[in-house]
Image (cartoon, rainbow, N blue to C red; front, side, top):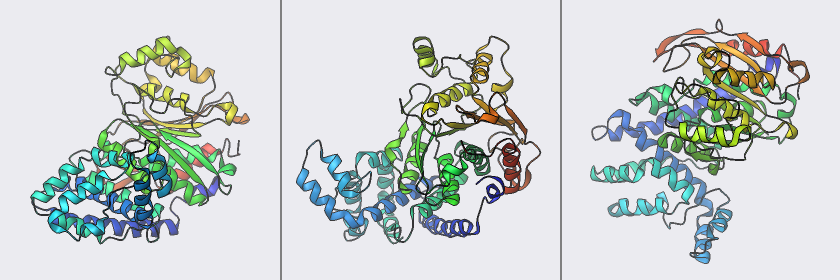
Length: 469
């Protein structure tokens, strides 16, 4: 993956695959035409996304439906039933309702009650997704508008069986649907997305140091995002690794505070065949939902310049009571910007050096780099990173790269087990000149990184080191 190979950001095969899935996404999105009138365009996603998830899960569970039902009858209300039912399904989820989407079509008059019964049959980890979407409310409204049977029928007719659409293809299609949802939503795209090319750059820089290991057949690595959003960073990392090594597996973990974003992230991962129990709901700064877990790779794009007053009691308590045994031992930044708290959190989540070490990438604005004089919380955090030789590189990105801000941004690379030639140094890369103007602006985003731009920055980075650990 190092050197010239890094520039193969979109192989012809992947581009064709992505195009095919975009067509599938467009076909599914066209079902939204049925919603015109009772629903506004920005509301379509609340129907299309959960129905797409439901159709995929229905198709995945179809072959073992009777096996699960038999197991459910056998286990009854036993507390251990959950374990046996998951084992019977061969997935991290199951459904004990007698219905399938196809069987629902046989009773139009009872579609609402039967569809809700079907939803309630899912294991708790999947029910959680539909609850976050408030899907039952949407079912009620669709039924009141005499649209429920028709919409369900349309989705039932879409063949999303795994032998027709692979997990990778399904993931690409779902991402395209999420993008369409964000574009029609009243919220800015920046609330949902870090630009894909920025993630590609971050992932390239994270993975290049482990080039040889990641090329091995059957290699498994873990990756974590504490500000997971809709799962875009995790998805792009997975996509990148599979492009370069189809036999590799990236086990994904994340935490997200926003309920709907959490639901979309969780849905995206279950569609990709990942264990959705690895995605946690909650405020990462108030409580680490994956306490004790560490990872090979971490990546994050925390909110820029957002104060942490709400989180202050919990953060201060951890800082004072746990010190360096907790996440915030080195110091606390001013309350007006919590970005460095996320950075300290990532440092704590890296796999220990004794177990092979870990690498992290985080997108920050200029504040963590320049704010705070000697002795301030910001200064103490920077001193901790440098004295412990954790900061490997900082890349200055072009302005106007993000959907919701045009300010200067920086990509920090952290490594708790630097290679010999990098020890005691921090590489600074000026990437501000590597971008292209977009034909059409998207919010504040007026520039983008081309594959060649990314390759150039990666080669500048790799000029110092592109050997494996």
